[in-house]
Length: 418
Image (cartoon, rainbow, N blue to C red; front, side):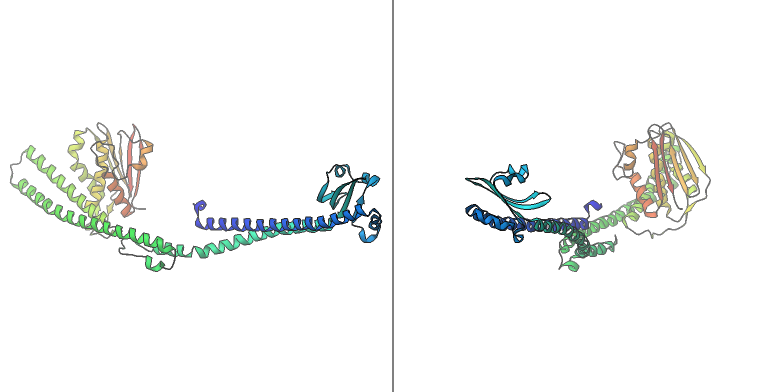
């Protein structure tokens, strides 16, 4: 994350620019100084050597203390020079080291042999080395200052980004019609704010359509559902009580109850961030488990499943019975569908409810996805059941856990409180 930090990029770019510019400046300064020395000393030494070649008697002047920096070598005196110097070709050489001192050297070929004239530039070289050291440490100091300045500058440069982040952090999920571009119209961040406003506008329209659909669908579904439940009650009271008719009426009642619970849970979840629903009477979890088992009695018998109960807690929940029922029902249905001929163990202890089955289990790589919407292992499944369970648990801050081993079964546990 820090690697892609905008602040880090600003500091890094600033330091690179300052380093390159400082290095080029220092290198250019040294190059100019060296070229200036070569040109100045080169002209001076060539002129003196020309005079010495044309007027050999003037060489005696170089013995005077005023010309102590000059050395003229010809004839037998050439052997005083180091061998590597004598092997040099005719020409001009700057900053040649002879005996721990630096000289500007001019070599010429004459009819009487090769001559050498040197001019001591040691003091200039010492100054050049000192200047080089100064420039080196100067670049380091400038680099350090650049880091400090860039860090401070990045804080100022990124202040509009922090302002935008702060504004975004204050927006609640239920807020609609929030627009930010007006607050950042004089800043480059305004482009980001404008893009966000465009996205937010589309999102508001989408949410409004979803809410309208949910409200309309719930209204349209509740009316025929109420009619169906009333008709079933009439039939139950007036139709001849035979085992076949009784089972059919019970299945219709159970399906209507499940549909009603699903509608209530869907409406509840559609109100994002709002858990202040009409709770009614506290829900007895143990009694609800018994009811859910009774509703699914036929499925359990058909799947030849042995149900084991261990309900040692009198836990009650301050949530509507329909919400808790659809949560438990979806977990139990999932266990029934994947445990034919096996066993399901339901344990209620303290604030924790676990439903364990001995079914086919789930591969480890698929466990993180079992609560995803549309995830299912059945060809005809929709993947809505466990996703609905997860959303309800998240809304009430219930801790939902799952553990599974292929071939050994699956355990889903809900902790309703601390």
